[in-house]
Length: 373
Image (cartoon, rainbow, N blue to C red):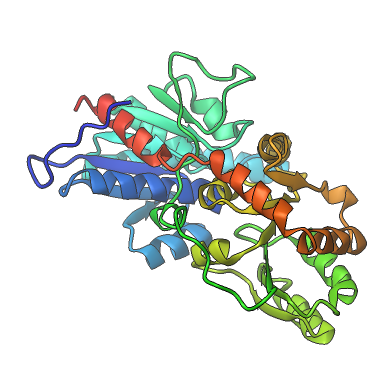
C-alpha cells in the first residue's frame, strides 16, 4: 500500500476515535495506531473511548492520551441478572457515545475490541461516520462478530481462514505494535555478565496464576543455577508469595505485579515464558525473542492457542498447554534452553521474520482512504 503523507503542518488535521479496551490485548494496538495517526500530520487528534476499567484509565493517564468513558458492561460469562442489567445499559451507552461524537466530531472511528467498542461503533454508524475494526486474534471476539456487518473495513492480524468476515472489507495488517517496541527491533541487548541467563515471565496485564504457581514449584529445582536471573510479572494477588519463593530459593529475581515499561525487558530476555495474547505475540515477533507460550485455556474460543500455534509451526516458539504445566516440566524446559543457546538464537531469528512492524502505518494509510483523503 502506498504511504503518501500530507506535508507536515500543512492543511487541516483529521480526528480519530479509538473505541474499546479492557485488556492490554485490546488497548495497546489502539495506542500503536494512535501513535501512527498523530505522526501522520501535525494537526491530527485522537480520542479514546472505553468503559473506565482500571487498566484503560491507568495506561491512558500514564501515557497522556485523552479519553472519555461510557456506562457499559460485558455480557458473556455472567449470571442471568448481570446479563440483563448489561443489556439495559446498551441504549444509554449508545446515547453517551453519540454525545461524545458530536463534541469531538471524528472523521473516522476504529473499534479495537472489548464490549465498550460496540456502542461507539454503532453510534458512529448511525451518524454516517466511517467505521473500522481491528481484530487481534485468530478467532474474533463477540463484539467484532456483532459489528462486522456495519463497518466499512476490518483489519486482521491473521488470515481469515474461517471466512468469518466479508473478504471485500478485510485487510491483513498484522497486529499494531507500539513505537517503543518497534524501536527495539534493530537493537541488540547490552553485553551481559558472563553466562548470565535472563528469563522473563509475563502473565498478561492481570498476571497468570497457573504460570506463577508452576514457577514457584520449579524454583527448588533451579536453585543451583547461579547464572539465572528472572524478571517475573505476577499480577497483584500473587506478588508477595512469588517474591517470597524466589528469596527462599536464593535465585536472583525482580518481581512486580505489573511492569509499565516492558520494552527493555523484552530486549534483555534470553527466553520469555508467557501467555499467548495477540499483543504479546506481536511484540515478541517485533523484537525477535524466543518464547514458551502457555495459552490461557479459558480465552474466548481458545484463541490464545491459535495465536501461539502460528509461531510454534514455524519453529519460532514452544507451547505448553496449561493442563500439562507443573513445576517439574517448567524447570526441565528452562534448563534445556539454558544449556542450548544456539536453539534460542534460532528461535529468536525465526520469530523476528514473523513480525509486522508496519501494521499501524498500514492501518492509518487505509483509515485515510476511508476518510477520503
